[in-house]
Length: 334
Ligand code: 13P
Ligand code: SF4
Image 1 (cartoon, rainbow, N blue to C red):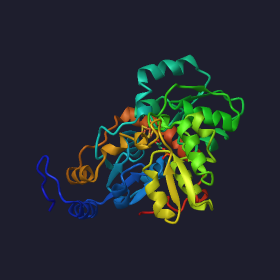
Image 2 (cartoon, rainbow, N blue to C red):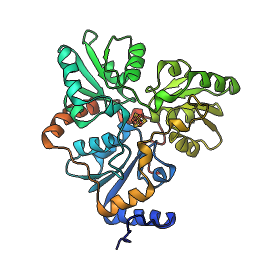
Image 3 (cartoon, protein in one colour):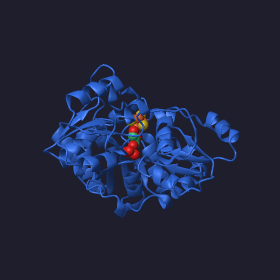
Image 4 (spheres, protein in one colour):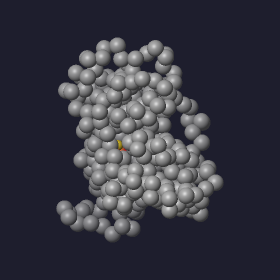
């Protein structure tokens, strides 16, 4: 039987962990976590991964309940792909600034303005925006998908203008961008990064493509969270500068304990401002409570779900095969 918790009452951490493990088994639940979650959530999850890995896991699981430790759009994707499962999120307020930057009533006008353009939409958006898109992409498959499209196909990309600009430069394709951005990745300071590089000249710089070009131009490797993790594991350097949310450093340290990882700084010279405030809303205690009550639950209305499923399925069909992802951390329970 679950331990009842009064409002404002909390269990000691060891009890929380053993209760989460017990409830997960009792309810046939799977805990999926993104790399930006707190280390203690990553450590209890059945699977830790990037947005694409987590979508694939949500599609493949035979669990009855998916506990999604990430942000709301990620949990929504799990529900769209696996509608028969109960999908819960520890904190329903865990949104995303990219999702917020792309309201459906404005996006519809943007689409109408460019009727000949194929709409490639970054997975960091609401189900309503997905429902208006042609193909969904993540930072780990966008380039691969783009390269499969005919050269004369006109393309629009939403909502992340930095990812769009990076892809346009990388593939040489012109695109029209929605002017959204991630508040976390925009905080990195080029000036501070240059100073940090000068203090650590032997440390390669890794960066997520949600960073502005002023940061990406200094990067030795640009990629999704899984790709950055793979890079630091395989690269022989002993020290790395990391320009993405610092939650990823937990898996880096676990996978390469002999290496050093330094978070890229924000304008004030420290990197605390680069923590995603939305991801941080999920805590071990909220994870316990949501497993206990199966609330809050993700709901997507059926018409939107079916419309949003088509571009998500396109993404899954056009993504690189799983075997080409050599990241030793992806697809493994920690
Ligand atoms: P990844 O798909 O690389 O994990 O990125 C998700 C995200 O929200 C980055 O801010
Ligand atoms: Fe959204 Fe940025 Fe947080 Fe990623 S880091 S979930 S893009 S706000």
